[in-house]
Length: 175
Image (cartoon, rainbow, N blue to C red; front, side):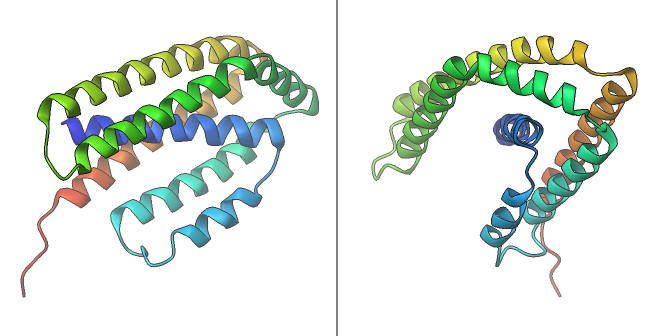
């Protein structure tokens, strides 16, 4: 269950960053760079999940039909929170590295791992509160159809995450 929570949290935060970045900047070039970074993972559950997420984001962007006015307002909202987003992202990265280092240390220290995980959890919580505040400002700018597209995207992403985890946990068949 912990593994699923970590993967779900990472995917949610990554999705938030990808969606807000795509809307604010209106760019798709990052998709090509990300695909290049996934070489050698073809056919694996995580690869299929990530490529599927990119595809779902592309469909979402198309389905959203965000107007230039909406894009400008969303960009302004994101910019107004830039002073909060950057420190939250930095804290997440720092806490994530500390947790990773505790996990891969030569000598396992359960207390250090739990402490680092607790700090990571706090950091995720702070980022989630910030994401909720930004969402509360952006959501009223969207039409009912755009909100429905976002809800459908979220539901499909959740299903894809569950499929990826289920598939990754399956034991390989023996010949």
